[in-house]
Amino acid sequence: MSLEEGMRRAAQLLSSSHYAVALTGAGVSTESGIPDFRSPGGLWSRYDPSEFATLSSFLEDPSRFYRAASEFLSVFTAEPNEGHRALARLEEMGILKAVITQNVDGLHQAAGSKRVVELHGNLRECRCLSCGRLFPIEVLAEKIVQRGEIPPLCGECGGLLKPNVVFFGEALPGEALREAFELVRRCDLLLVAGSSLAVSPANFLPPMAVEAGAELLIVNEEPTPMDAFASVVIRGKTGKVLPELVERVGKLSRD
Ligand code: NAD
Image (cartoon, protein in one colour):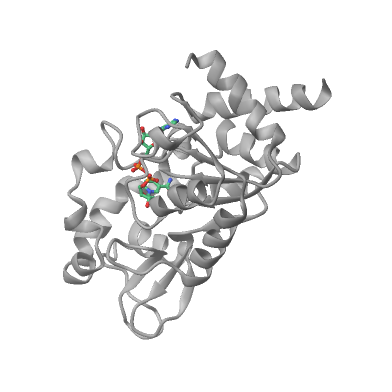
């Protein structure tokens, strides 16, 4: 299918859907300057995930995690890009009912998306692994950046502070996972944007949607394991493709 044909069919699918839901990954935020994991040059090419992004490795040597995480500081100053804004616009138009995201950067909300289900937690908060208290992430950032306190410790009990994000080997937040399953079972169109679909259990969602009878639309720079099951695959940058889809959907509704 040519790019033009793919764009045309994708816009039709979106405008004729009754309950479209998006599933996003790190790819939607690369154009905001946040590196993803699996693109060439992404974090995976420089760090072994088993060495810093699993709960057991974090507990074994938190300093190693915090040193690698300094590459991720762009998350705190990043701004939403045209791809995030296009998804917010689709929600405003009444087409998209929710965004389920694997991202922890909060950029969908910053772009104006209202219903955002965060499968992997968020970087707005950090948690003390001893007393369980939650603090704003600024508390952790100040300790690391201003005071060089690595690993950062809880001001109340001296326990280890961890960003409130899900590490490999950790369970996903139950409420978010339940909501995601419910949305995917109900949707008639699942739009996957900027995800390699390599991370479980988020990558269970597209097959679940297809099995329940939904159309699958994938916008990603590289192939994914679900491409063969998609009604339309568009290979391109979300910051370019999604705004163009919004424009086409708007035009279809005016015609
Ligand atoms: P991933 O790194 O596995 O895959 C990203 C995919 O996006 C790749 O297939 C790549 O080809 C594609 N991509 C990159 N830039 C793109 C663009 N501009 N337009 C279209 N496609 C683009 O990411 P994932 O599937 O989300 O899984 C990785 C895990 O990493 C997730 O659990 C996520 O929580 C976490 N993560 C989050 C962030 C963030 O919050 N911004 C950043 C890095 C990693």
